[in-house]
Length: 153
Image 1: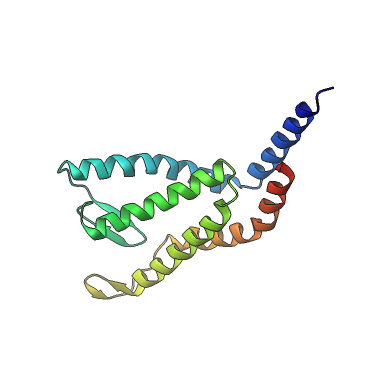
Image 2: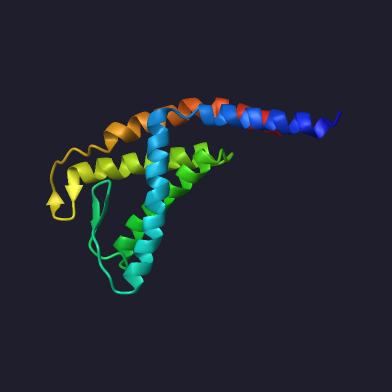
């Protein structure tokens, strides 16, 4: 009997376990940000060609994607895309990068809740209603995610 066949089966089984750790609501956001990543790349190319469109995330707004602020907003979208890719394709670094992404998102939302470019004001950011549970879920998934990666090694 070929031992590699059993090893391949064990690796596929542990990968299935890793993906099964991701709840449905996170899977929906993963696909949203994978698609958004394609549009982000296309949007940057369009910006270089002179087309302009409105970008917004976490209360940050940019009218031009080729300005420093616009590039920052695009980079936030690309970070979310990288995390979505890592989670969907079960990369070892996905949880760590996801925690960084969620923490950064929460921090930006909190700042933009009390301060906008026009000055101090209060605007509750609805993104916090998704970011806080996202951070908590990723934090709780860390150990199981790492255990699943050790099984696949």
